[in-house]
Image (cartoon, rainbow, N blue to C red; front, side, top):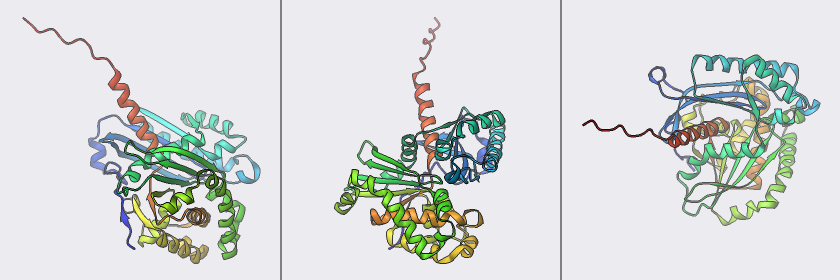
Length: 361
């Protein structure tokens, strides 16, 4: 079965061209997402129903390293994150923006010293980083992925299950689809992600037995969400779309597509058949640590986190076996940008106009 494209954001390219950046003179917005594993920033300008990317930044900081064992952010992890945030702040100084929103997720939610760390971030970078709730995390992911759920949807589509496999948690969003747009029915945030699983399972996750046990462990944690919403029953009756947004899912799509290097325009919006996704998981597992380090879609920095992500993916698709998975290379940053742009437009639309000038006699 061939993979089909759902159509990526026309106004959200992988990277801006230098001539486009120089010509731009309108309002810009910046969204920064400090996660358990990555620090990412996106700067965009309104364009049609979406936005045009002006600048982007991504760095693996492993902020949640050791958090599972100690309950606190470690000094080295905080230093790495602050260095990345200083780089983001320097970029923003060179590019004036109308508004910046910076958020932190699971690592700062869980850490006993999370507030102290964010106070240090404010003092050393000037960035005001707010910790968002698990519900808002699910809502932002849905905001960014809504166009992919609408494009190419079969007429019988009534529901969607959106999942985001993060560093410290996995977000689930059960969504109602209608002509008026997607609506969140239920959500959950499981305290398992690629970093937490990697620390719990270590090298055992690279063995066949360890990987299978990791999948079983995740599946047990998903059972409560299934018991509440009966998603499996809905899938068997048809009309449910499955959408994944995370580095794990985009990596699986890159492997299935045989990419020699990761290319966002080829991945974002692709409909990945479940059988091809399963083969990609098996292929990655068979490579072992050395093979994963050399793979162009993985590399040394992500080698410890790929198989834990695959275990979460395998558990999700085993419990909820949809025919295909829509792959989204977008998430919280894109959702924040869309919200800021919409709020800015509404604010300017409410500004009263002055009196009409009198006509001269």
